[in-house]
Length: 170
Image 1 (cartoon, rainbow, N blue to C red):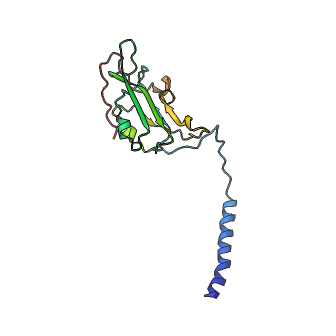
Image 2 (image 1 turned 90 degrees about the vertical axis):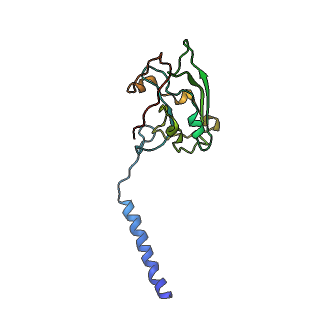
């Protein structure tokens, strides 16, 4: 047994040195992080995005199905009624308050699966670090996509009495 241990010791050292030299000869790849971000896989789940129609109306109708489907209960939705003077979504209601506690979120994607209108998706942004816990409460204004980003979506007339669910793509 002692002979085997005596022979294996140098072998382990040679294998370790080989691994070290193999990695030292490879080129160093550095990503200029704030300016350039690493490409994410297509199915990666990052920061939540609330979508709009092309005419600027929000897709979220305040049905709270995302909050019900959330396994950890980190989503809070308060609905309010649309009025002819103040129309926010094409349905009868809209999400007056929409908040996600990102510290409790497990990024499982159940919220986007539960939404019949495809109002919420999980985008490619993964840089969520911050210095204070209060900044991890994502409010509706933070999650709404800009108006120019929703040009490719199909528009729903602003006078529509109710929104129809979007058919799934699979």
